[in-house]
Amino acid sequence: MLKKILTGMLFMVLLSMPLSAMAQQRPAGKWWRLPRVSKELHLREDEKQELDDLFIENRRKLIDLKSDLERARLDLDALLDKGTLDDDAVRRQYDRLEQARENLARERFRFLLEVRRILGPKRFDRLKRMYRQFRVQRRQNTIKR
Image 1: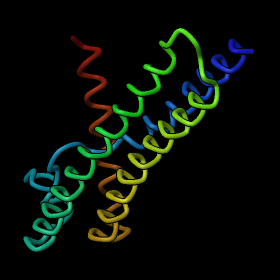
Image 2: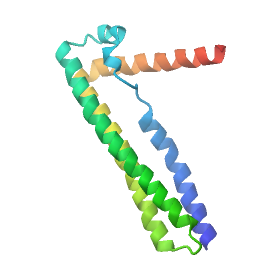
Image 3: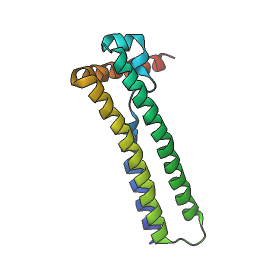
Image 4: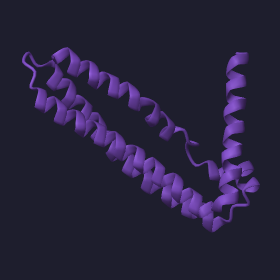
């Protein structure tokens, strides 16, 4: 019975990992401050400032949410490492861990929605194309090394 529960939990963790990875795939850092990006997207100074403010707000939230996630992970590990396993406590803690992951993904998604609102649909699509091109170039450069 315990093996089935642990196997099921491990399966759920592994199943949710690709979703977390998708939420993390976004340009890192202040990409709107790069001259080429700013020029290509025709960003005004007030838009750059709005993105700067959004970035700081988002990073602060991400720090807290990542900390919550790590605590939930640590607490689950502690429960699983005990000599006697309390199935209900493990399930509740696993639910807390999943909620922490969801909160982190929601904040990342909220950031993307705000960026889209600031840029508008056409410039946001252009940004996505630029990002895809950047990833392809980065992969090609990695392969050449």
